Length: 439
Image 1 (cartoon, rainbow, N blue to C red):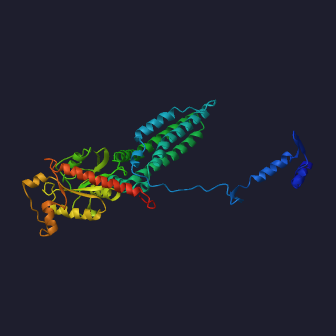
Image 2 (tube, one colour):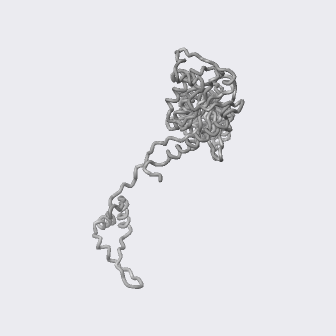
Image 3 (tube, rainbow, N blue to C red):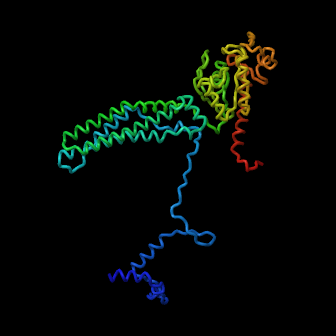
């Protein structure tokens, strides 16, 4: 009691009472504070309760725990599909997890047979549950959410996989993970509560069979995710920093042949519509400068609501990527679509994407020299001056080429180079901040 009273009494002692001890040094004597140990501890404890920072030469209390800066995830640039994790088939995941779980041994030092068996069973069920759940959690965390992808890649997911299928597969994989964790914990707990060796073995067998049944019944979601990963990873990556030329036109007008001639791309060339089933990428090297060329599915004469996913894929490229457009026309009628219908599509696309750099090409000009085909539209627009000029020579300034006779190919190559250089200038100018003046 006297010790406690002394501590309480010393708490109220003025600070000048501590300056009573004198310490001797080689060059004189100095009065120093030397409080007793328990008083110093109390004093330091009080000092640690406040943190101060210097603001305008004065000390201002500052909060000790600063709130974390919670920023929303940034929209990713193109290339997220190449970062997708490798997905194992559901059968391989389960067999690998089962092998690892069966190698788990009971805790050493348990002499009682029943206790040792239930310990082994509980540990194996817990290990199997974790070996199944951990890769599923990794898939869910590493597959990006569609809302954070580039608009072009969001369109690719929707048009390639179907609206909502991407999210639905991820949801099913997460549901499978939750069920595996729930069932695994439940049977591990039952096994740990077994009263005999036989009961523990039965609980272990029952838990293993239950987990196997669940994974076999709902593991198709993992296989669907594997298909999604393969499909998206195979999508061509468009470098936004590199000028890109996009070939557009009706089906079977010769876009793929021009891509093969202009670039390293090797799309399929056949005499039937919609040969191009997706976005195909090639590259051009002109004077040691590298450019990109994309071949797109053909467009038909119809409104957007009636277009198929291949046509929507072409429109997605033009809408979300900064490309120059090489529009290909076939006035020979060999493509299966009349030039008058091609004219209608051309006018619509030209007006919609007027901000793109543009280059018109009339393909198969060797066939035009052999025979002239006259088409009459159902709308009775044959006398329209603009349509009449289009039916004869194509759009104003269009380059007439033939891959077969190689006519106009050199002129086309030179014009393509000029357009891509202009596109490069646009890309560079878009990087310059508005508040910086260019000399």
